[in-house]
Length: 203
Image (tube, rainbow, N blue to C red; front, side, top):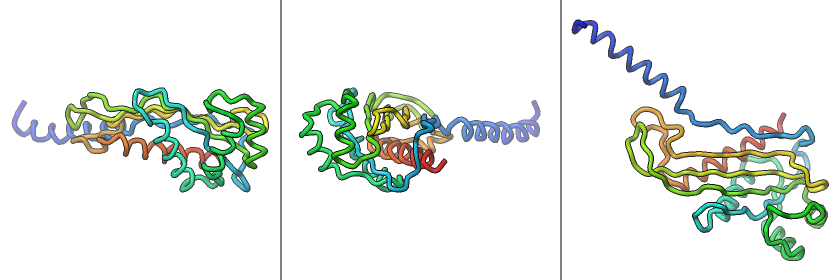
């Protein structure tokens, strides 16, 4: 290949590489399940139950629970019940594990709190892992959660999402878009989940 041909080819190759990185570096999209029974946001009240933590990181459940509270307050049109009220109601019902609450208990909690829906979350992964990518090798945060929103009247799931994120899942060329901090990744994920729910209400 001649020198002139190389000069023409290299920019073209770089352009293709950049386009590919932009297209495939956007990371996974969140595709929630939304029931046809999910109603609009007018007068809607929701309560966040304590998140279950199945990850190896102590306190990860409480961290994600608090972040979801903040992001749902900012991004969801529904009113969020004060966590103190939720804690007191759970204590009265002697509930220890939110992910295994019987439907009858859910109904009683809904009536006592005036809640339409309850948010139930499970943290599966919340840690740093070794990885490589456009930004080079190193540790990246890894986060995986499952979240369900259930109807307080019948205990049925009206909305659900599985959110799995890695610090390099949206990384493009030169490490652009790479997330280095588990805290930042958790904040981004919480915001995206809250925004996805708000979009579902606006259908």
